[in-house]
Structures are given as structure tokens and as C-alpha cells.
Image (tube, rainbow, N blue to C red; front, top):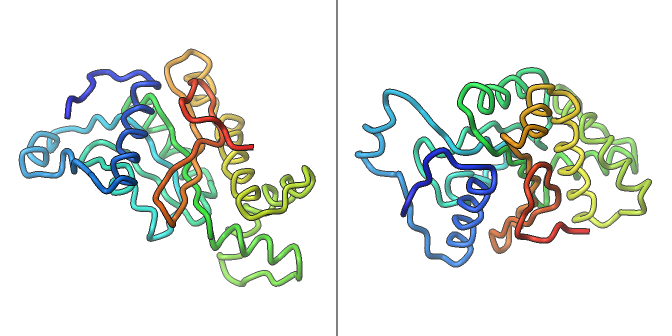
Length: 213
């Protein structure tokens, strides 16, 4: 596989999309996963994308996008909810490591989204810090319902879009990078059944995959 030096946001998106297509087709290349790559990147890292996704065990980033060591700067939390440490990690990937692309990755059957929906319907909020996760997802569920979107895939897409907008609203670093054309943020919804990642939001780059309604 030919690697791209100093990729643009579009280049980085195309690399990820191509990897996901290989994964879906069952023909992965498994790039950058050998001892030579391990030795090559030991002194420093130059990932081409930041991936901010859900912690779900079925969402292993390097596998579903067919990438390897040093390719992705990965930040994951349940329901891809964010706090200062998450924003700081993403800003590090973009501002220090010069990643031109930030991916927000959600998925169907997300426990955090399901728990937020259940809490609104019957008041069954979990205890401990899980409650904090659910409370951070709740605004997305409320926004979806206000727009008449009640199907699980619609609520998920709204949560991903809300996260994309929240990143740019809260981080001046990311907003300035996107405005200058130096970075882009793309929201993807991943389907567990077939492994396909579909674009639902894009800021700063034109995506080849139509955004979901």
C-alpha cells in the first residue's frame, strides 16, 4: 500500500474509507502491523487521523479501518462522551501531531444511547459514574426527539452529529484548524452487522459518502 506524505483532510478520509471498504469485503491488507513498522515508528509518531469513538469492544479502530501501528491516534469513551481530558487528547492529536482529520465514531446498539433513551422514558437512571455518561448523551436524544427522530438509527446519527458540533464549539484549536482548511471533522455511524461506516456529518471536507438523513 502506498502511504501519503503530509495528507490533506481529504487524503486522510480516503485512506480510512478505503480501509473500511476492505474490512467490509473481507479483504484486509493489514498494513503497518509488522516488526519493521514497529521499529520505524519507535522514535516518533505521525498518525494521519484522530479517531474519537465509543469504547465498545466491537469497535476496534485499527481493525475496522484496516490500519496499523502509528496510523491512528485513538481516544475512546463510552458513548463517545467528552470532558476536558478528551478534548485535550484530541487537541494534542491535531495541534501537536498535526493530524488533518478527526473522526467521531458511533455505532448501532450503543449501550450509552440506549440507557439515555430508557432514562427519558421511565426514569431508570443508572448509578455511579455511569449516570454521568448517560446524562451527557441525553441532550442528543432530546434533540432527536424534538426533530421527530425516534428510530434508534436516527437517534444515534443525531448523537454523532451533536458530538461533532460540540467538538468545534468547545475547542477553539479545532475550530480554527477547520476554518483554515488544515483539518476536518467527520462523523461516522458504524453498523455492527456488516462493519460498514456511514457518514452522517462532515465539517471541513466534502465526503464521498452521502450524509444520512
